[in-house]
Length: 146
Image (tube, rainbow, N blue to C red; front, side, top):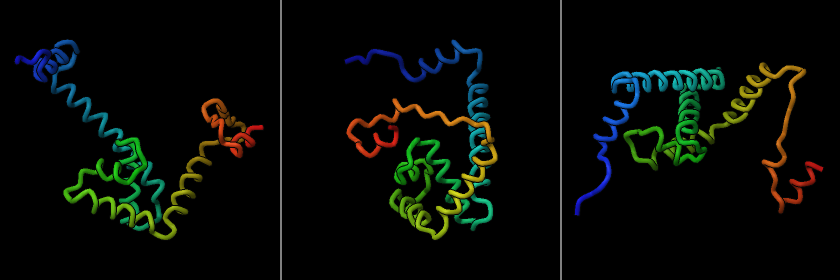
């Protein structure tokens, strides 16, 4: 039975034929964007982890990277994003051990609040879209907005 449709090679040829970029230019553009994103992650994690142990700084960097790339805060998803040469279970265990580090969460909270404080001025508005946070069966939650 013959398979219908385009092969990966054909799709690739069509993509580069339809765009003004060559494959090399497109790959270079992707690499440039990836480098920029990685730089922003390093900058943010550097601000948050200023003044703590190197191991904890690496942990924060890996968590920020993993959350950004996988769109999840689950340790298993973050661990998958790291693509380490060890078993997934060992990576998850290492990350969970770092989470237990005394004082780490407090330090991160304070650093994030400090960074936010610098950007929020006296005349800033806080706008809450209640329709996005509606939970019809949550009695306590509903009382917050009455």
